[in-house]
Image 1 (spheres, rainbow, N blue to C red):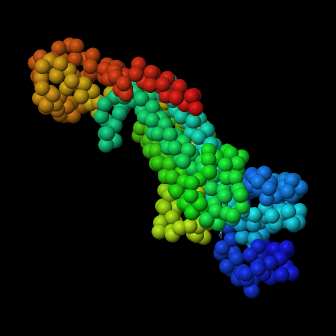
Image 2 (image 1 turned 180 degrees about the vertical axis):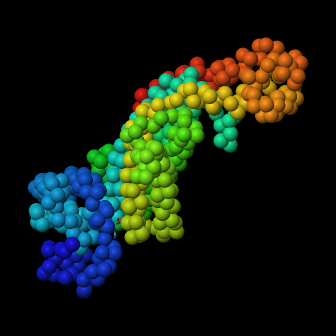
Image 3 (image 1 turned 60 degrees about the horizontal axis):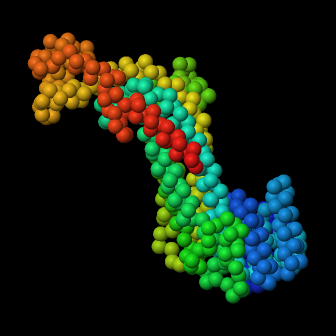
Length: 469
Ligand code: ARG
């Protein structure tokens, strides 16, 4: 990109007064951020409007100057929207590009906009505004995913599947119960997101370069105009810390970790070996060589994208580590990881929010899987405890029955009563009530348990919580 504005004077950057030679062209490219920070243009203009209004209110700008600044900013905004704005790498970043164009448009009033402000508090303000907007979008998508998950859970309160530990059949659970476990993870992610929003929503504007400014600024006015809850307390901290971006990325890393676990289960469940669910074709792709293939690309890709999001968290932590107060140019490196995290999270949430409600469970297959693998062994042990056996002895008796089942290929519910009685004579016909899948899940009838009545009630509570947002 060439900068036509500066053609006649090699040192006429915004800080040209101090310099006797132009910036090396490689250094210019190396230090510029405009290629990636121009996405904060809307926030930058909003911050400038609020700052200019405040400068006029405290008597630093005249009403005429203010009105010229507004007209100029409106035009800049228009040019950016219609694509005619000439972004220039020589002007380094979004802030200086906009200010230079404003001055080109309105002259001397444009040069007054930066009174009592620095790019340091300006960029700290812009990132917060941008991130806040992104958080609000993410909150909506996350809510949509939760609603879809809860809806599928409510429809499947009675659908029985094997529950696993160590990916080995453990005990029968309701498919709805499993889905509500996903929702709990998402619910905590949502609350972490809101915590992060709450802490970051303070205005650094007025901190100026690092120490504040000599003008009689009204920080409460700009904070309120930009929708912040209040101005930040300390000017040095305001321009230097990016902990809010790190906090957001740690929220994102956890959310993506949770979505990778869901993805992994979807991939397993959609396999021919499990065959628990059908993923709609529109979320899958075929193979160019194997005609039978239907690949669960969407969950696989979400699982894979955790890598970049975790990487961005580490980037930001490392970027911040050991930085002395106050602002350092290092902080310019906060944007690309942050923006990519936002984009990735939004895409993954969108994919999941579209896909999850469209999952078709194969109830018969799940049932079949739950009926094998001795999933009701614990129920038999609990039954024996009911007959007066200490739990450890009951465990031993059931272990022997299972060993017999492994030898003969019979599950517990398939054995004859007399066979079961060889392991413990007190067993009677009613044992088969607890050995059925329905009996097993219905018996876990307490808060947080897998009994269908509990699952339905939990789904209703979860939905009410999401709807109350
Ligand atoms: N582009 C810079 C950033 O992203 C803006 C702040 C520059 N401040 C400075 N003193 N060089 O951090």
